[in-house]
Amino acid sequence: MQRDTADLLNRRDGTHRAGSTVSAPYRDCRFTTTDGLTLAYRDYGDPLAERAPVLCLTGIQRNSKDFHNLASRLAPTRRVICPDYRGRGRSDYAADWSTYRPEVYLADVLQLLTAAGAHQVVAVGTSMGGLLIMGLAVIRPVCLKAVVLNDVGPEVNPAGLVRISASLGRQVAMPDRAAAAAHLKAAYSHAYPDLSDADWLVHADRVFRREEDGRYVLDYDANLGKAVAAAGKPHDLWPLFRALADLPVLATRGELSDVLSEATYDRMAAEKPDLLRVRVANRGHVPLLDEPDCLPALEDFLSRH
Image 1 (cartoon, rainbow, N blue to C red):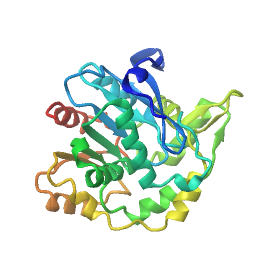
Image 2 (cartoon, rainbow, N blue to C red; image 1 turned 180 degrees about the horizontal axis):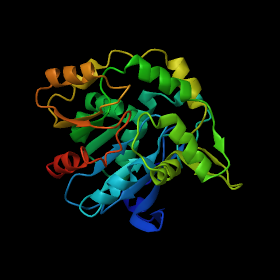
Image 3 (cartoon, one colour; image 1 turned 180 degrees about the vertical axis):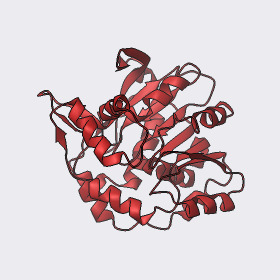
């Protein structure tokens, strides 16, 4: 049974530390899906803020920690809701891995918006999160006020799809935080060539979780790999993108991206002439949204919606 908004405001507050710096607190929230899973989300800022809430949806392997810095920047003036999909982060893992599929994620997101009392949002979607937002524009367009698509479009570059699919379903365990950071640097330095060693440690905190024995393991259900393999090739997603026609949309692209090609990015602009575009230098898949190329444009876009 879903909890109502008043109940959700009684959860404990969490505080995130990055090094010695304490940043914005968030409410650690839960709701129950129709198939009985308890899913988690971080709820930043004032639930009664006048501006439309921001809903942040992550990539396929990731969780709410990805958006902590952005949410902390926005929290003084607006509410920010950052969910963990089923099988990720603090959310329950599904006994039936076949529920790890887009239509179920969409149902979960709609239940989240109901539970949180957020009826219209500005949606920020990274990678798969952006595809889910396009799906929302089809099945529940009234819930969207504006959209940010982070390095994702209605066509996925085959090279990027192969790379992501190959990494899914492997549960990596590292002996400590430094080893976890070194693993990520070796695997993803092509996408983030200018990150410092300190940056990779922060990245490790987002991607891994620390077990009681001190090991760092990837913070998602390895059965996700089975679900992606069973899904097969992606469908034609251009009709979903066209559902955004009447909405303000900002689309970022990492200039080193192997997921969103330049050709697809240009076609997006041709099909939606009012599309705002931001190219992010020295970034592959995906920009972190705090880059100097990106953050000012993103904050300006959000401030206008």
